[in-house]
Amino acid sequence: VPTDCGQHDFLVGKPIFVSESPGAAGSRTHGYVAWDIQNKRFAFLNLDAWRRKGGGSATEGKVLQQLRAAGVVNIPTYVCDAETTVETTGTDRGAPAAQQLGAEKPPLENVKAVRSYLHYRLVVKDVCLPLRDSNSGKPLVSI
Image: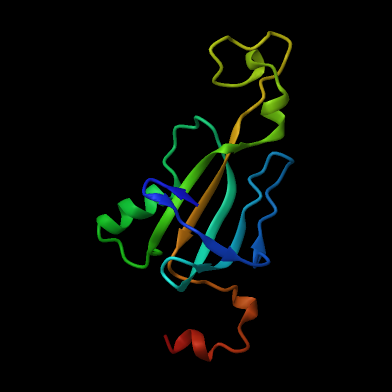
């Protein structure tokens, strides 16, 4: 994950969940248990998704940091996040600049604008597993 302080590397295996966003343009979020190479501990690659480029909304990582700073409890512990500028969707790479939303030129009247997306990753310290993977409720109530 590229960060402001350099590259932060993780080893991941098969995703433990894949969201099925409705429609072909959904973010298709993946979640992975990851090994944090620098800190030598497990972490959770919570989001491996596509965010709309120039959407103007705060990233999930920024929101987690703000909630923690405000003293909100039960918020996952932020490790790092990044919008990768080198990975974009194939649809916007193939569209003429006039068709892309956010382009300097307005879109052609009879051509729908193509939305641009950036690959986004968020890593948190807290490793979470689906409830369906629990054999009983005892571990859940003993926390």
